Image (cartoon, rainbow, N blue to C red; front, side, top):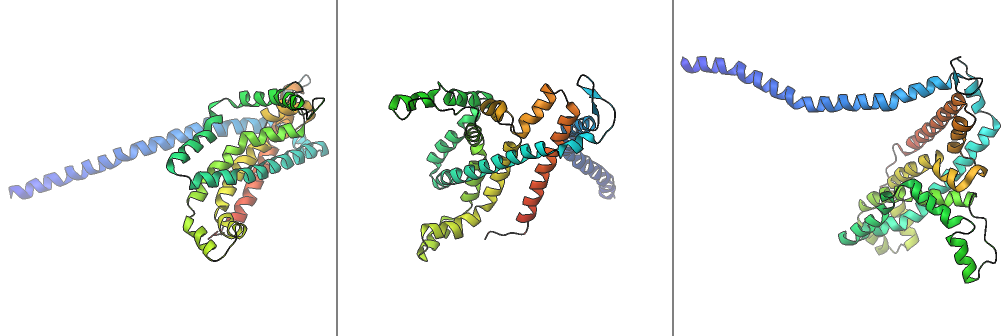
Length: 302
């Protein structure tokens, strides 16, 4: 009888403690979700809403914002001059992504197939540029490309040139700066993708008398497609909206979307138009991402 009473008394207490423990164990997860939601809301969604509101306003008489609602800013986004700048930025970002993919694949393959010791060393070398501020690294290319810079001085000293080349403030300097800045973002996803490819598949292709090119086309390239896709997104999107590299290496002669937005905000003081161009850029990036996602859905590289 006493045992029955004890069991009847203990069961509700045990159930209460179990529920309390389950609630307390879920509390950190809920707190993390709430914290992440507040952070995204305050520092991501709220600024987007503010910029969208500014894009619907009008430019003041002396610059700034006049809170008169209008769609004129979005109509001006389709101006032929803006289209040329967008197309030029798309072309430069596309070439940057393509060259990064071509240069990054051999390096990523060596990294993925190297021993753990050499893999750590090579990965450290890839990551070393991130230890320095991006602005400082871009200024280093200014010192290399200018008329009295390192490259021209070296070529003149060895006798290849008699007069310095105009390398700075050209498309070439912007292109080289973009490739240099975003190459690691292509290398790392490719390393992760190639590491998942078994070397036995390559040996099997050679056993079937496949050449190196055939093995690359039919084994490595299809199975590395997720790495190319991830790296392409990580390189193409920042290159499309880049500001520091075109501004420092291209000057005012090589306008890209990022420098055009900066000019509208700080030079023309047309904040509504600059905000509309920013949303146009974001819409273009989302459209490209959607198309890439549609093409990659359902594809099994194996």
